[in-house]
Length: 154
Image (cartoon, rainbow, N blue to C red; front, side, top):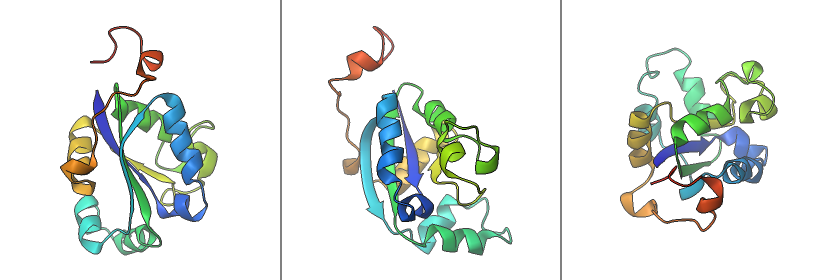
């Protein structure tokens, strides 16, 4: 099982799509291992987007991510990183296929509803960035045997 980070961005919060997006992840069979609403600080944004801090568009990105609280989620499942990325669709909502979260709810590269970890390694780092260890729970959902076939999950 993998655990990945998803941020429901201010555009998701402001457009009141939180329940709709969470529902998609749960219906797919991903388990919510941690979830909280938080206002992102300058410090956490500079760390999270360290690869973009020197770009001229970073101040706009920062302002956008601080426009309202976000919902941080740790989602767990078999190949969770890959599954969540597929469900989210490409970063630019105009390029995302209908049926993906961004394809259904986004027309923007920046206002694209969700952040999803891009690798197993980054997912581990990002989950630790947004959650203390005691905020991420390891439990077995009773529905797990109906989500995965015998031997698919460990």
